[in-house]
Image (cartoon, rainbow, N blue to C red; front, top):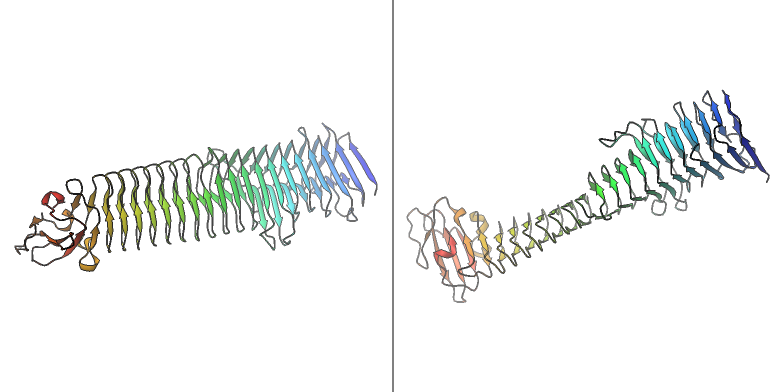
Length: 510
C-alpha cells in the first residue's frame, strides 16, 4: 500500500471539498501554520467519503485554519484515522454541523488548539476511539445530541473496545453559565452496547469542563481531579466515578452497581445519587450529600458534616468525622455516626443505630431496632416496635416509644423518658429499665398525665381523680412501677425497673 504525503502551504477558499483522501492509500496530510482552508457551502473541507472505502488511513496534522459551513473534517473508513490539531490549529464548523465527524473504529483525535461546532467532535459508532484534549473544544449547539464531544453508538457487542477521553484543557457546552453551572452538554453519549458489562467509556479530566456530561447505557469510568461545572449523568451499567476535584452539580449514577469515591478535598455541590443497584458511595474530606437509592448500598461520609440517605434496601451508612445526618430509609439498615454529634434515623425496618463518639440523636423509627449511643450525651428515641436502647457513656436520654422496649442507660446520669401511656405499655408489653442507678438516673413520667402524679410508694391506689404512681416490688428484687394516669384506681401503664427496689419520689419526674 502506497503512502501519500500532502502539504497545504497556501490558502484555499471554495464552495466544494478542498481535499479528498486517496483511495486505498495511507495518507499523511499537513496544514501549515497560517494556512486557511475554508469551504463556503455545506461540503466537508477534508474528507475520505466515497473514495477510501478500499482501506488505507489518514494522519492529519493541522497548524492552520480548517472550516466549513458543513462538517470541517469528515472521515468514515472503518479504521485508520488520526488527527492532531496543534496549538495554532483551528478546526470549526460555522454552520449547523460538527467540526470533526468520524465513523472510524480506533480513531485518535488529539487537540492542542481550538475545535468548535454544533458538535465539536462527533464519534458515530466508533468504538475504541480516543480524544485527548489539551486545548479547547466547544459545542455551540443546543440540540439533544449537541456537545463538545458527542458519541452516538448503537449496537455492538461485549468485545467492543472502550471509548477513551482525556482532558487537561477546556471543554465547553453551549449556553453554559459559569456562575450557575448547567448549560448544554460538554460530553454526550447516546446508545448502548449489547453487553454493557465489559464495554466502558473512560473519561479522565484534569482540566476544565463547562457543561453537563451525559453517558449512555455503558459501564463507564470517570476520573476528575479538576473542575466539572455541570451535572454528571450516567445511565445503566456498573459505573465508577473517582473525584478529587470539583463537580459543580449532581452526580446521577443511574441503575447498576455503581461506585463513587470522593478523594481528599473533593467537592460535589449537588447530590450523589445511586438509584437502583448495590452502590458504594464514599465521600471526601468535606460535606457530602449522598443517596444510595434502591437496593443494598454502602455509604461512607468520611470527613465533613455529611448527609447520607440509604433509601430502600438493607443499607450500611457510616458517617465518619463531622456532624453527620444519616437516614437508613426502608429496609434493615446499619447506621454508624462515628465521630461528631450526629443525627441518625433508622426509618422503617429492623435497624442497628450506633452513635459512637459525640452527642448524638438516634431515632429508630418503625419496627424492631437496636440503638447504641456510644460516648457523649446522646438522645435515643425507639419509635414504634420492640426496641433495644443502650445509652453507654455520658448523660443520655432514652425514650423507647411504643412497643416492648429494653432500656440501658450505661455510665453517667441518664434519663428514661415516657411520653404517653402507649410508650410505657402494660403487663407483657411494658418497657424495662435494666440498669437504673438510684441517686444518679431519673425516670420521667410527667408526660403521661396533664396533672402531677401522687407518689404512693408501695401503698395501693386510692382513687381520687388525681393521677397516682405506686411501686410493686417483686420477690426477685425488681420493681414494677404502676401508673394510674386519671385517678380511677386502674393501672393504665407499667414500667419494670430491673434489679432495683426501694425507689423514692426523687427517682422520678412526676
